[in-house]
Amino acid sequence: MQSYTEENYLKTIYHLAEKTTNVQTNAIAEQMQTKPASVTDMIKKLADKGLVDYIKYQGVTLTEIGKNTAIDIVRKHRLWEVFLVDKLNFKWDEVHDVAEELEHIKSVELIERLDEFLGFPKADPHGDPIPDKNGRFAKTQFIKLIELKVGDSGTITGVSQHSSAFLKHLEKLGLTLGKQIQVSDVTDFDGSVEILLSEKQVNISREVAKHILISSNGKN
Image (cartoon, rainbow, N blue to C red; front, side, top):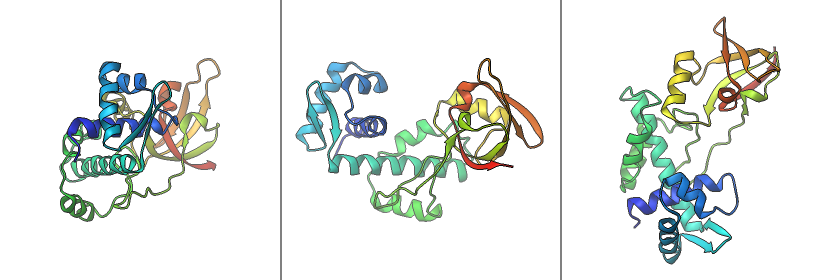
């Protein structure tokens, strides 16, 4: 059984591994806001438990056991986020820290009942896919809003930036999950995007647009 800290390391490595094959200790240290030396010590402990493979200067990879453990933590985290939003009326920018605590609950029976109670959701309040009890993710197809052309339309299905400030900004603009949008214009100068949302024009920066994920309907 892993400690809370060990589970947090496994989850962090898992998320970083989605972007690169061999995760570097400096990247883990930056993500977890700790010293590289502390990361190295923890990686050695995880390697001794058979949860990661570590080669000095080449990085860290999760073993099959480590990956399955990380996916289980991700599953619990995202299920709890759904529960907090759908059943306790938390806003989508308020749930991450609470779910960080709840994800460490060990009871398998509780999580299975939670999944059933929620109706076996396929995605969390930010659009991130929730793995099933066997660790399988539902396939999702989306593109970044910044990749749409003028005239393209689609549905907001997720975000790739989960900070509270970013989510509050989207909420203020009305850019939440399930909303239909159409690109009206893209400014050559700075890449800002003008979109049609509920019959009103909304201007967003390129930085915001690249973190909004869309299920594209193509051109209308």
